[in-house]
Length: 290
Length: 279
Image 1: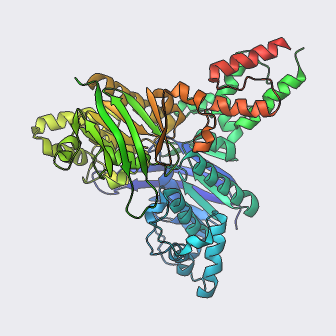
Image 2: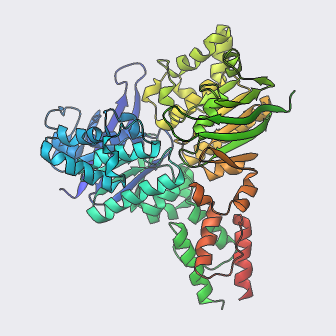
Image 3: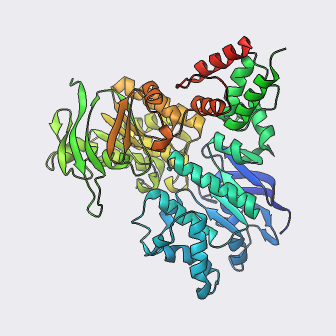
């Protein structure tokens, strides 16, 4: 695997060459490190979903190119020979459970691996392994995906992507519509895949608390352009940058700022999640006043 | 005008293939113009409850009245005209080839003149800040933009009751706040009642009242402030604690001498400050 996913001068037009043509991506240049946890944030309609759909070549750049490992994708790329790339990059859409279609959970999870040429004899163990990853009981395998709960359907859809053993996992708002417990489960799962399997994670999320807690890098998109790319710590320390693009601060930093405004000496870099802020406050008390 | 726009009495409902009741003996009233959040874990019965309110599924027992009329098979279509329902996933709701066609489609049943229709469409697209997308194809919009359009389509019909089923979940936080303010203003102007299923703590704080469902039962009917005080273990109901409560919990666990009750952010900051200055 090459070290980076490279977007070079990428433009994308919807309804190209029609009167309603509009530019969804404009001159995107971006190098995403392989092995990183990178989140993409930005207002509704800023081009986030368009950008990540290119990673799986669901759409191709109108201009410019994308390099993933040995693959180079541009407007002329044909759909032939893309299977190995599509196996490498697992894409989980918004509301992935909408795409469940088979008569049983097993069949649904097995669809991808079979499609990518996995031997039928290995399928059962792969399905079981994937169900284990998303912590669903093996017994669910023979149920119809439509008779299980919404939260379970989401996990089955994710299991179907994980069954292909992707090296890069792209998730577009994976927690939308789940209750907070379900959200936490999905985020912990993604975190685990990143840490334990060194999977490259590319996450789109509007939830700044989630983005700050889990990401190493953050990309900000605005009107189809990449306007910032930096470590999560640097992005979230830069309040004026976030304000400029109508993005909110994570709760931990909002609270931190209020404590600082109240002259409480926290003396540390901005906290990325609640426990970090908690530790800073505890330390402040153990230092004592001088 | 009637004080209660909705009266729900002892309603029960069970899906055919289910062993347990999805809605178990629930009663509540909603006042005209009120903004009510419905919360609870996935599978607690929230979505079923609003389907019952909209007459999309039928009660096993009990009654629901809108504006004093009890919903039955005969009047359900008439009553439904008062209700604007926006689902979480707007893909299931679009019919038009362009954004403006889609909104116009909903208006066509209401005998508006062409000029009136254009005016209404203009107005609602302004409200949701989507004017420049009026010629776009709904399916090509982003998730959050679709949710804005779905909302515009429903507001165009000027409903007496707006029901939102996590209908702003894909809009960015800043955009969501704007949309919630737009709905709030619209509701004040036209005395529209708002019922909203949500997991968002900020949205819960905005509402007048919160109904907490768990396993088909109504376990709490209270104000947002009281909810955070009353419900000892919100996490048990798969709800997220407000940030101040998460932080208090962590600090108490690490032996900071904080009172063991719900404090909002202002109170918690005051408390930490006092404690620090006493050192």
